[in-house]
Length: 115
Image 1 (cartoon, rainbow, N blue to C red):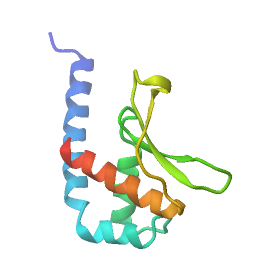
Image 2 (image 1 turned 180 degrees about the horizontal axis):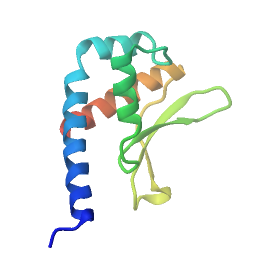
Image 3 (image 1 turned 180 degrees about the vertical axis):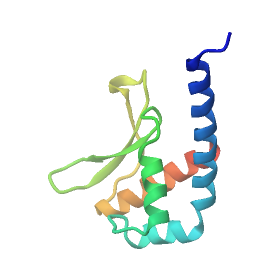
């Protein structure tokens, strides 16, 4: 017998599929260029939608910026459940917070396209 939970699950699946499809369509070179120009914003609607979608992704496997000193440099870590501290530090450092943001954006973009 079909339950309301089954229907809710089905609707959530449809919503997620349509949402992912829209984000894939929105993730154009223009969005990447807009983010590269101004990673802190303000962003146009399409760029903001893509940035929100990447930020709202599951925590496991997500890249985050780590402050390695009082005013930088910055590093990037990947949340990895089961690793010591649940975090893997990726190689490289950035002297600019904006450059670290750009790198995180590109890594999340790559992961999104592979999913």
